[in-house]
Amino acid sequence: MKKTVSVIGLGNRGTEYMGFLKYFHRSKVEIYALCDKRQQALDDIAPKYGVPKERQFLSPDVFFAHGVLSDALIIATQDASHYEITKQAILTGYKYILLEKPVSGVRAEYTELRDLALAHGVLLVICHVLRYSNYYSKIKEIIQSGELGDIVSINHTENVGYFHFAHSFVRGNWRSEAESTPSILAKCCHDIDLIAWFMDAPCVSVSSVGSLKFFRKENAPAGAAPTCMGGCKAKKDCPYDAQRLYLTDPFYKAKFIKFMKRTLTGKTHNKKSDVEAAVKNGDYGRCVFFCDNDVCDNQFVTMTFQSGATAVLEMNGFSDKMFRECHIVGTKGELVGYGTKLKKHIFGGKTSNVKTSKLHLSGHVEGDIRLIAGFVKLICGETTDLTNITTIEATVVSHDIALAAEQSRKHGGAPVLLESE
Image (cartoon, rainbow, N blue to C red):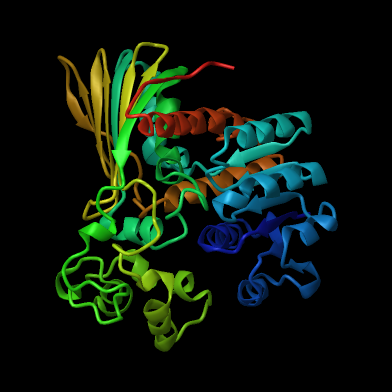
C-alpha cells in the first residue's frame, strides 16, 4: 500500500517537492491533501495530483482540525509561519515531517520544536538540501577518510548573484527581517550547516560584520523612479531593470528569475499581459533602491570550533552568477571547490580532480531530489539510518551560529560565545 503525503504551502519549493514525489516515487507515495491560503494555488495545483475538493484547505487550522490525514507532512510555507504550523503538526500527531528551512529566527521557537519532536517521537527533517548533493557528500567523505589530516580552516563563500539577491532579498519575500529572518539565516543556513557538518565539533565563538550597503535610496542613480516601468530615466544602464529581467531579456541572456512567472502573478498559467501587469504594478517591478528591504547584502562570519579549527563564511549579493566556493585546509592536504568542480591536493603528494557526479544539475536540484528520496525511504520504513539526515537537532546547531552572527554584527563584530547544551 502506498504511503500518503500532505503538503502545506504550494509555493515554488512545495510544488517542486510534490513534482519529485510524483515523477520519481509514484509507486510508493501519493499526494493526499493540500493546504494553501491562496484559492488560486489550490485550483491550479490540486487537479494535477488528483486531490479532491474535500482534501483541499485554505488554512492550517482547518487542515489540522481534521486530525492526521496522511503518513507524512511537508511544510513549505513562508519562514515566519514555520514555528506555529510545525508545532500544530506535532501536537496533532504527525510522525514524519519535512520542514523547509529556516525553522525560525527565534531560538526559543526552534529549540521548543526540537524538544516537542523528541517528546512525541516525531522525525522532523529540515531541508538543508546541500548536504544531500553528491558534491558535498564527497567532500564529507574525503574529510572523514583522514586524507586531509585534521581540519585547520574552512573558507566558504556564497555568491548569491546580483539578480537573485534583488529578486528575493530586495523586492521579494525575504527582504524584511521582521517578516522573514536575517539574510544570513534565510540564505546561508545551508552553508553554516555544511561548515558545522564538515567540522564535526562544537562551535564555541562567532563574530560577524556586514551591512545593507548598496540597496538604499541614497544610492539611486539620477533619474530613477519608484518603479522600473514608471518613467525611470536610469533603466538603460541599470542591471536591475525589472522590465528587462522579467520580460525582455532574450533566452540566451535571461536569468532564471525570468521564468518564475508564477512568483510574480500568483497563477500557474500566465499570458504575457499577466506578467507585464505584475511587473508594472507589483513588488517585483519596484526600483531596488526604493524598496522596503532591511536585510544585509553582504556579511562575513568567523567561527571558532572546539577543535581549534576556524571557518569564515562570506555572503555577498553582487556576483554575476550564483555559485559557491569552498577551500578546506587540513594538516595533510586541502580541497578547493569552485561551483561543482573539486580539486584535491595532498601535501608532498599528488593533485587530482575529484569526480562527484556524472550530472551537475543547477541550483539545489540534485540535493532536493536526493533529500526527497531519503525522506521517502524513511516514511516507507526502508531505512532507519539517520547518520547524515538533517534532523531538527542538527538544525539547532546551524541556527544558533547564524543568530550569534547577527548578534555580533549588530554589536560591531564583538565575539559571541556559544555554550553546548
